[in-house]
Length: 327
Ligand SMILES: [Fe+2]
Image 1 (spheres, protein in one colour):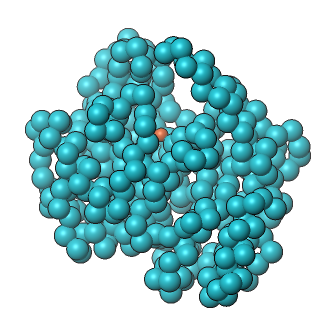
Image 2 (cartoon, rainbow, N blue to C red):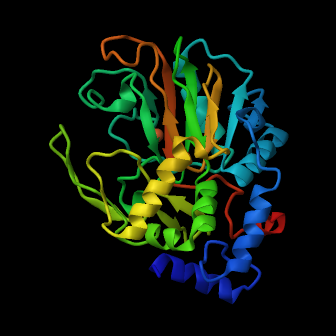
C-alpha cells in the first residue's frame, strides 16, 4: 500500500464518519459511494451546462450549480452570456471566475503569459511549435500534467473557448472516477496495479530551451491526502511512455483503452462554442482534429484559453462533511 493511501486511511480511522471509498479494503464504503455516484449521473453534455451572466462575478446560484456538477461529475460546462469581442478581455475575467471556486495557485507553464493563461491555438513560436496541442491535429486521451512531479500535480483546469473551428475540435470528457468504478467492478486487482508507484513512466525530455524535464515515474491513481480525492495521471499515447511490465498493468491499460475507445457510455462529447468553457477537476479529455486537421499546413483561428491549477475546485473535497452528507 502506498504512503498516500496509508495516511488517508489513518485519517479516516481517527474519524470513522469519513470513510475512504477508494480504500480497497473497505468494500462497503466503496459500494455506498459508487451507488450514490452513479445515481442520476448526467447522461449528456447538455446536462453539464450552467448559464452564467457575468464570468467575473458568478451569482451564488450559478456558483452552487457549477459546484454541484463538479461534485457529481468532476466537471461542468459554463455558458457565458457576456460577450467578449476582444479575447484579451476574457483573461482577467477568467481569473476572477476561477477565484469564485478558490482556484488561485496556477501552474508555472513555459507557454503561459504573465497572468498564467496559455493560449491553445495553432502556433509556430519556439515554445509551442511541434507540440500537438498547438496544432490542429487530434489530441489523444489524457489528464493534464501527467508528466509533472507529484508536488506540481494538476488538480483542476479551466478551458475557455474564444473562437471555435469551422469544423471539428470536439472534446471528449470522462470523469476519472467513472473509469475507476469500471476498473474496480471488473477486478479490484486492476486498481492495485494502477496504484503501484512504478505503474507509469514518462522518460526525461530534452526541451528546446535547453532544460531537461526529468523522468516522471508514479501511479496512475492516487488518493490525495488533503482532499481525499481520487487523482488520475494518464496518457493514451503509445510513444515515449513505459508501462510497468506485469500482467495486471497490461490488463488495466488495455481495459482503460477499451473504455476510451467507446465502450464507456458516460463519455461526454461536446464542441465548445465561443463563450463556453469547461471547469473541472482535471478529468480525462481528448480533442478531435479541426479545420483540415489531417494537413499540418491548413490554418485555423480556433482559440481556447487554458488555466491549470494546483488546487481542486472548492466544495468538491471528499473529506468535507458536506460532501460526505451528500453520499
Ligand atoms: Fe489537456
